[in-house]
Length: 81
Image 1 (spheres, rainbow, N blue to C red):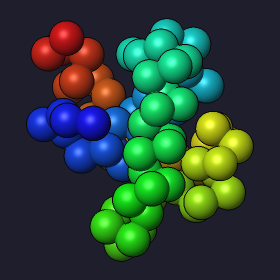
Image 2: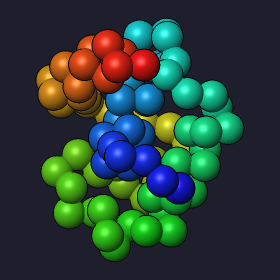
Image 3: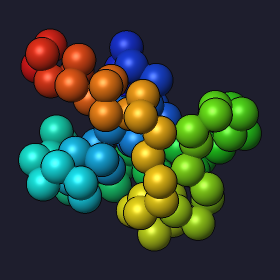
Image 4: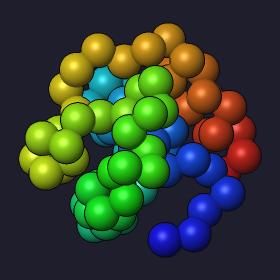
């Protein structure tokens, strides 16, 4: 997986867009691939302050609390796509 965006940030923005905004920024398949990538590389990303748990990633969902920065980052990301 190659992206110029941090995978944790992408996961959180995509989850927020889907579950809270009802306006996805990626397909379900892309989201699932991102979850698999994060699981495989969890040791690299788990120190990220907003990294979902391994259980969240295995479930392919995040229904926890979203930090305010996620919504702002999503708004900025939408301006770029």
